[in-house]
Length: 123
Image: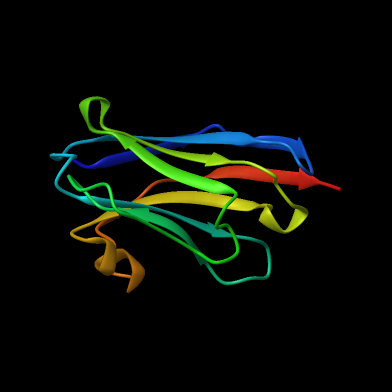
């Protein structure tokens, strides 16, 4: 059974930082792409970032480039999202997901989702 568990969300002031973690289990980790997505109230789910398996190639949404960094620790089957210079518009529930490739994730073909962690950025 594949399990994805997000953590690290919270309340932070604009300009602050948070580090999100996604712990994965139930399948080989390093060969699968991972990604972060977010959804704010009244808005559609939005792509944030993806990272490939062994090659660790990252893609970012334009809105977070230069501020967010996605990374993974394959030895610990863990995905991270370092979020710096946070803005109120970053407030959302953040979800991690896994798929066969980064393109699969970007096209919406996720295999599994986590339950999400809430990020609130105050102005």
